[in-house]
Structures are given as C-alpha cells and as structure tokens.
Length: 232
Picture 1 (spheres, rainbow, N blue to C red):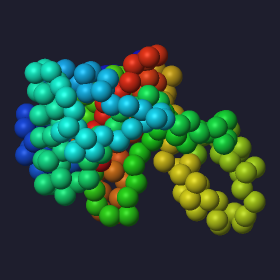
Picture 2 (picture 1 turned 45 degrees about the horizontal axis):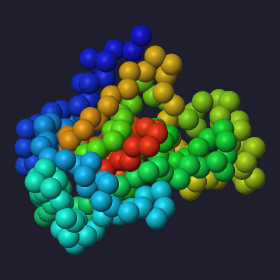
Picture 3 (picture 1 turned 90 degrees about the vertical axis):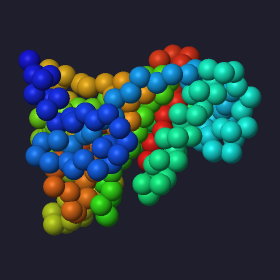
Picture 4 (picture 1 turned 180 degrees about the horizontal axis):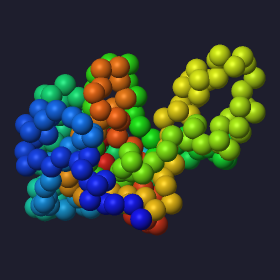
C-alpha cells in the first residue's frame, strides 16, 4: 500500500500569506499550504449567486453588492482579502461558483478535463493558487503514486492510432493536445484532499522550475451541492 506519510513530504505547511508566496519549492516539495480555520457562512454567498450555466464567475463588484447576514459578511471579507492579497502579489484570482465542469468525451479512453489528474504548464515562471471555501475540495495525487498516461503502453498505442504524422512529430502531437499533462493514479494511491479554507500554492511545469509539477484534479461534485473556488 502507498505510504501517505511519504506522500505528504511533498507538502510544506505555513501559517501566513507572506510565507505562502515566499517559501521556495525545493527537493520533492511542490505544494505549499497556508492552513486556516475560516469563519463565516460561505454557503450563503453560493446561494445568492445565480448560475445560468454550469459555472459562474463572481466579480469583486458583484460580491460587494450582495445583501448578506453577519456570517455572510464575515465570509465575504475573507474572500475579498484573499483576492486583494493575490492581486498585490501579481496573480489574477478568479472566484467561481461551480455546479460542475464540462467533461471531455472526445477520446473516451483519455479525457483531458480537470477531473483527470493533471499538471499545469506555463511558458513563464508562475504558480497555481487555489482555495475551496465551500463544497467538495480539490485533490492532490502524490508524484510518487502517479504515472504519466502517455507512457502507459496500452494508452500510448491508442494515441498512436489517432496520430497520422511522422514518428518525429508524435511527442509534439501529445503536447499540442495536452495529453502529456495527464496522469493515472496507482491502484493503491493515497490521494490528499486540499480541504476547506486552506490556501494552496502548487508548482507548475515551466522552463525554470526546479521541482516536479504538482499533480491535482477537481473533485466530482456532490449531488446538489455547488463549490466556491478561488483559483489563479
């Protein structure tokens, strides 16, 4: 069975925002978590936001205009503080209410949506920040317990059947269609929940990265329960 304690060695825990943004990734550490116990009623904010589709973006102005109870106002203050801190750091936070994400069924044997364990990639140095305030939290797959799907022989064979170019161009084909970003969990993998209220910084695959990118995915939403997620 996979060792959870070994898996958690890739996570470093901090107690404030400054340490979250300034602590370097190093060695196997590719996830940093600001652990928090938040106050306020985030569900009230979720209920106040109207969804015309599967997901809605809450702009800061809209958030400020919501008529909320005292507990809802406490939750809103936390959201606004998080967004302002991330913007001051140079990030572009997006606050979403999510019913569900669109699922990719283009290739049934290889979905490339956010429900699949994947890494984020960028041409420039950056990090992924996220926090689930309400609903099912995101999950991390320890790097030691996941395998890149394009290296699994039976999956690779199926991908080659989709590809009609020269052998030299196959790896570029995998990258262009984002197949190389996705991972499969080992049968005994011990997944790590990101929990509620904690603000996470995850390593991204970029040219200057000194650590492996963090494998993560969106959770399957609980029936009838929306999520409140900040991500950038």
